[in-house]
Length: 126
Image (cartoon, rainbow, N blue to C red; front, side):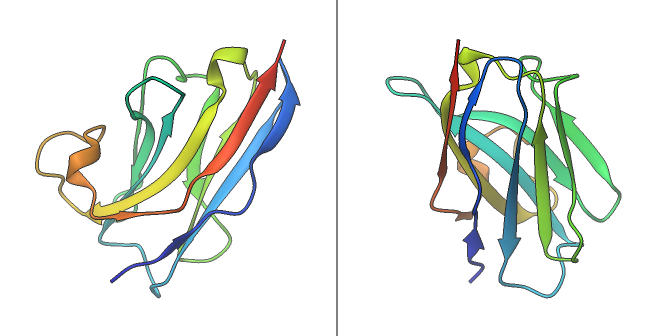
């Protein structure tokens, strides 16, 4: 069982930046595909970014490409999502998720992930 903890989140004006972190209850994420999803009220959960730690491969949705960066944190069990040039449409609950590499279907398929954090709210005002 892997537990994911996501401190961070918050409110920011459009054009601003926020960083989210996710720490897993394992020593290493080298065999994991780590992802960030988001869900706005009334909308489906959307894959935002993912990283296969074993090879350092990253994936991004078109809606955040060039603005968000997923990376390793300072420890082997932490993943960071740096969000720049935030827009009001980025407002959502953000979730950290983990599964064993490779995913059964696609990195952005929520059903492929076995472990989820509790979520953290990100609000971007215009």
